[in-house]
Image 1: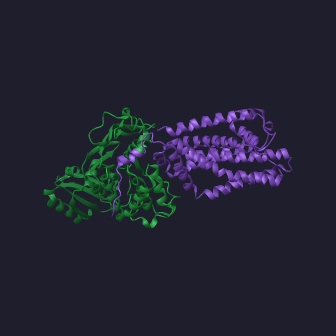
Image 2: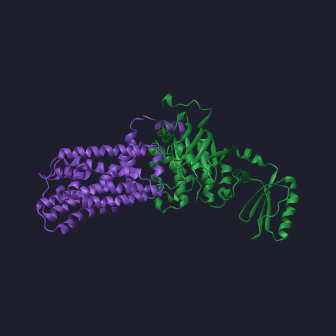
Image 3: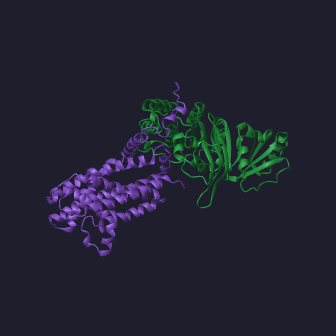
Length: 265
Length: 328
């Protein structure tokens, strides 16, 4: 047998601290890792996102009955936000919980990858999963309710910030909660709260005063507002404030995630 | 790397130096108790011990997944407690538990891990192909992990750890579920890692197999290293001793032991007795009389093995089962 040997010294030198491009290289390889490890569930996840988005647009129509154009626009844009938020707040923590349950969590953290690169890779892949579903939801809304959207460049930062905020909070939850069962319970409750008690599909003034006030500080309503600003004209107000609130949530969640994954018990 | 991370405790050729390491879990359990351990480059150290001895806790502190309560871990002059990210770069790790293989083909996951660990695509591919061939895994290189048997998964995990060389290779129970034939192939590759210059830490229950593969052995129990040395130096503890194994009849009480018995242990109906070589005839005579009286079903006399040493060190009833009898 021919023997192909590499001295450990040489191997270690390649990944020595400060090697240029280590973060970028790690990020790229972790994106490949994420894609490959998702590929069995990827078609299903895409189909689920599509059904979820398009299904909500149609289903809410039945629930509400004949709706005026403004309401329909509110609904259709809100649903894209719901699918982004549930992806981050529900799917991300559940994927982490599943890896804890399978016992592979420790292995992933033993790889010589900067942890921020690993999280960023996961964020990237998870975000891309949501794109087809969102696009289709808007298409269905256009066909079903005869809506016209006016898409501006603002949709890019709005969608990115929404995805990053939701996924970061999801990451922080998934990593911080030790018991996967607890994670699953909490995410189930969250879906319920997001769907029915967050002013994403409807204006905040329909909620009781205290809940409307609470949503001033929570990210859901603001996420809906910035995305709506990117997809419609004249529906969204106070967009600057919404971006600011979302930014604070994203930063806080990111710091919390970095702290949680960086600590050793 | 900066001089600041170099430690004064670095001694001679030791690649890994663990000094006075203790780990107390938040619940209060002392899982590692003042552990000292050294591994040189080119050496395989076997870490033996029953479940719950603290072996995996020790490993997780080396790799940076757990923070020691006190003590130091130095690898190639780097303080791993202060900077766990260095540990991840310098160590290759095969964990005891599951590996994320389900949606990968072995060649893909080995390739990715090799490159994550710093390898270039060509070198990684070449070495991966060679390792997969050496472990006779060619048949499964394109099969998705979800469809692989436990033993094959374990071997793929080993290839993931071995595909790109590391200062320290940590293998936590690498032979679990692996068939006897491939176990031998695996030990050969473990040996080769050390010969190429890595320090290898091999965590195992399997005393007899470990004996063939390791340069040194450390026995751990209740969080402490209770013995350390080469296999033959450990075996020397029972030189000129023999083992008399006695299978008692169902329902029989332990018989009155004659004075010639130096040490004994009962596991279920089986009684292990340690005797001096010169008492062999007398011991057989005694055992035969037990059999004739219906107290024992069978008896056997044999040379004392490392397993006996291990069992005596651990001194517990469950030690034998944990000493790698049958499949673990």
